[in-house]
Picture 1 (cartoon, rainbow, N blue to C red):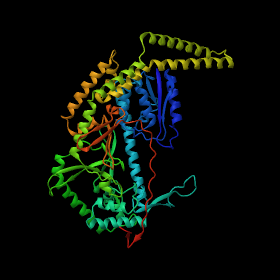
Picture 2 (picture 1 turned 45 degrees about the vertical axis):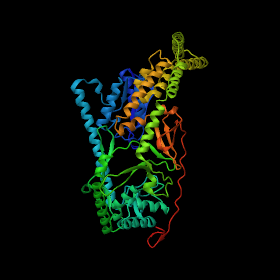
Picture 3 (picture 1 turned 90 degrees about the vertical axis):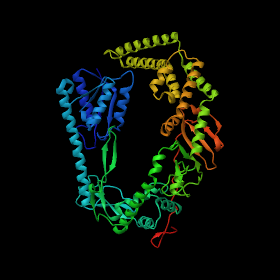
Picture 4 (picture 1 turned 90 degrees about the horizontal axis):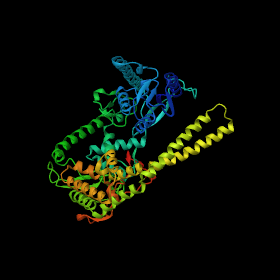
Length: 601
């Protein structure tokens, strides 16, 4: 019975069940059971919580388990909690391995020797213990946060308007490395940033919206906290932040697990927050903060009332998420032109999201493109190029050429298989000779060299024999937009005796059916189909619109086309992109304070 080992520990303080200790105990268990260990299949995860499945070692284990032929039949762990502390995750991991024909065995919990209801009951009890452990850890973290906050210290980084300051805590434990009491985090007011915060609260009450405030800050070069420019969403969150009252709020969000096992955060109602007032120096008064909240609530209520009808009629847009600005690389969003207050918009345009929300100082691309015109032009351009007989012929010819180059006839395949069997037999004999007790060091070295030379030849034969399979995968990748599933694509491509005519007819039929379906689907479904062929649509400052085909899609074969009222829409094949170096962040222009506000604002 071939085995693999998985080991994990959560913190640097775990010694008894450290990686080395777990692996050693698993090895002893495998030896006692009379099984064999494949040394290439030991998967460790260092200092990673068992509450998450985003672990390199676990992901590598699962990837190896899915490969064919299977390299191991059992996964041995020190305990089932090493797979996951979450019973749901542990069950999912175990079920996935069992689908691959692999059993999970615990070295310290011998469930594999039990049968029937007894085994189920024992495993359920262990899972319950692990869930209780997770709940205890969460409670311990919460108590630690409350204890720290009650003494005026913080466990999170300071928001905009404050800066972090580390101070000595005489009542804390001694740091073994320095011999001094551990330091704690406090928030102190950043004078320049605090003036910006005060200015935002006052200006909002004067009638300025989030977009206008963000645009003003960007025009004057006031540096944003976590971005190159200010966004309306950042302004909104700052105006809602109770930290500026001098409050320190814990428990504002909860982490919940969805039906898919993934965790996400949800907002808690205010009565569930753990609030510590006078925890630091306030920046705004409570009266000013309440007035801002009242105006935000009033505008939010009015906004929902006015656009409820418009959202019901125009909730989906065909090209959102596909159109990008060629200047600032932001998404183009849909902007509406209203007829009268409370009525649905008459006109819809695609505009640069950064320019619209952050101001003209952030992006110079002023193009406003009629949504209906662009949607129609992109669909017509895509249909025209996909149904071009010359393009279909080129793709069919490419598929045939890829398979023809990699094809091996029956005689050649049989010859390589015979050579492979012969080499494997020779390696087996040499391995037995190498382990013989009477071998001298020189003889052992010579035998090892012979083994390595044969393994090298064996690897080359495997590469040649694997050539047809890789060619099929390459063609299947090209045909993926029409199958939606790689296994189905490989199965179709793997069928023998396909001529160029067969490929052409198949592509023509599939593309025709695909184009017909575009006129019957919802905008969301059409957008999903377009994304199989289109990576993005870029709008340049001079008005040129470029459609970038995906590397896998059929649009990798097209060139320049005419499209409707927009003149020339250029469709470019997507090339394998090299990793771009991120542009250096521009330095803030800086600002000085004048009469309590940033100068020039």
